[in-house]
Amino acid sequence: MNLCINLTADNWLKIISLLFATIGGFFIYYQWRKSIKTRRAEFINQILEKLRFDKELPKYMYIIDYNQHWYSQSFHDSDIEASIDKLFSYVDYICYLKATKNISATEFKIFQYEISRICVSNSTKKYLWNLYHFSRKIKSACSFQYLIDYGINSELFPTDFKNNNSLYTKTLNW
Image (cartoon, rainbow, N blue to C red; front, top):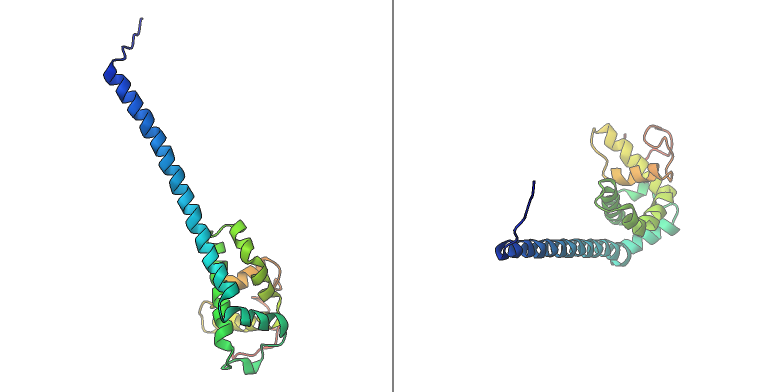
């Protein structure tokens, strides 16, 4: 059986066109991947800028770091409660992004230091523990669940954080 492929000028043009289309497709794919990486980097930078250089958030980071006893009964309805909640909401969102794999483990490392600093504070643990148990009492999700889960999973919170009702001083009515 003798197969002879006769490549006419028309066939050569089709092959060359297909080759150029393939090369173009690879180039478009490369540019698309590059633009996604750039947008991710910009997104991470926006989060980082707010966390580190916002007018308010670093101020309350400092309170958490250096005032080890910021959480007590007088905290609720105080001037700093809303600002601490704002900071915790922000880092909870970062923990949410990590948990849902919207940021990679490598990208999360950029925020890990600040989040760990928040989690090692005894007042943070007391506050989040009270909020968690209060939320359970009213059959609601806790506002800072992803931050709590991060604290437990990274062993910055006690492993029985969610189950031990006498771990810290009860401040909220639950």
